[in-house]
Length: 79
Image (cartoon, rainbow, N blue to C red):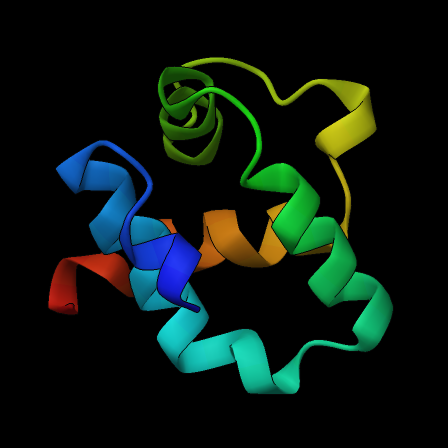
């Protein structure tokens, strides 16, 4: 969870850190691996993908990304 709070940009720290705080414990081990691998991407790309500014590349368009995007769209403003 620490890594999700200190990604580089304040926006991603809030979005991904908020998601991690709320949902990390409910992710399966495979989903945790996907989440951690996702965080290795460029901050700008991550922000654009989760906010819908750019389409998510097929390799990252999975159930973890769907959950993060849902969190960003429906819950992140309350963080």
